[in-house]
Image 1 (cartoon, one colour):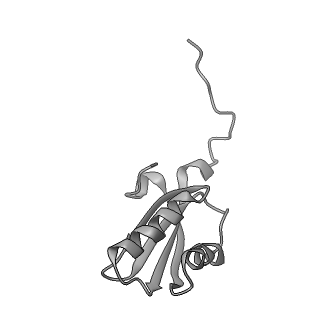
Image 2: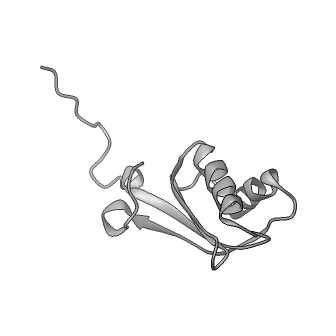
Length: 104
């Protein structure tokens, strides 16, 4: 049995981090709309986690850090339908151990 070891320095936390984008979304009129947006988020490369809330018209998207900007996330929303309007209201990086998001 062969064991693989990482050659990355111990201080490198990039593979232990998630960049979180919290969005306010307008134009979501049903659970189906929320599911369409979530499915589009999940289909993007390097997205680790997403959740879209119909009732309060918001979303959380977790990605690998440093790959996407807020405008990228908003473009994904517009790709589904121009009736959806989004605004990133928070963006931050957390350690995976500190977050409640799974590596789906």
